Amino acid sequence: VALGEIKKDKPSENVPIYVKVDDKKLAIGTLSTEKCTQVSLDLIFEKEFELSHGWKNGSVYFCGYKSIPEDEEDDDS
Image (tube, rainbow, N blue to C red):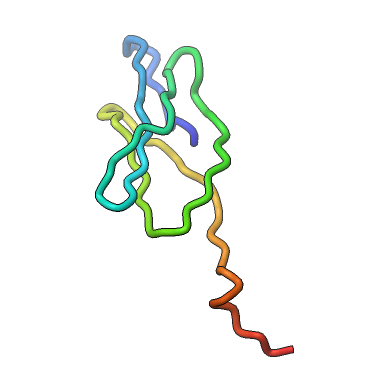
């Protein structure tokens, strides 16, 4: 998770990072425009989820991957 462009003329801000699972919104971290602009997370979800953030002055980038559970894979071998 990483913050996008940070304007130098803006004061330092804390940016909460959230995940929503089963209609529950949980905080999973906080980024800072001054001290911590990115963080690495190891998260595994077995249900649908939604990532979001609370920064009104910029973009937050999420990077990761989705794997297909073994019971859903096609076994063509």
